[in-house]
Every structure is written in structure tokens, then in C-alpha cells.
Image (tube, rainbow, N blue to C red):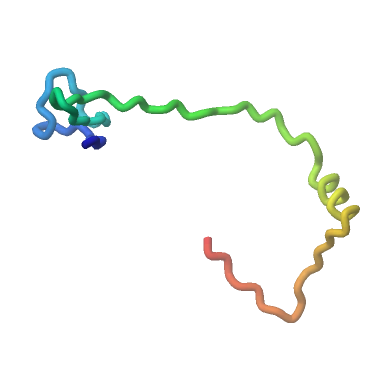
Length: 81
């Protein structure tokens, strides 16, 4: 049996547990084991800006046959956001 539990006061009464931190609780032949769950660091990348302008991308798409035109005589639905 294995589960992840969040430590709250009066629920996990083990010395050294920090309130609000997640712990992995495992049961095996020798008893119960409680280990802290490592929190992954968010991956952040530096963005150096666009390499091409939007018109360059649209020109490349137009070269492949892509085109778009505004819809006429049709109601545009409202934005759900």
C-alpha cells in the first residue's frame, strides 16, 4: 500500500514533519515508511524574442497554398472567455 498525504497538525504525529508538506506513506513487510515528496522545480527558459515576423510566417504559409478570408453573412459567436 502506498499513498501521498499532506501533513496537517493533529493528523500525522511524527517528529520532524512540516505542516502543509506532502509525504509518501508506504507499508511493507517491516512496517510503515514516511518519506518527503520532492517538489520539482519549475522549468524556466529565457525567451530571446521572435526569430521571424508574423508576416514572414504568413507569407511562407501562403506559398504553400494557405489563405484565409473573412466570413460574410454569418454571425460570429461571442467569445466564451
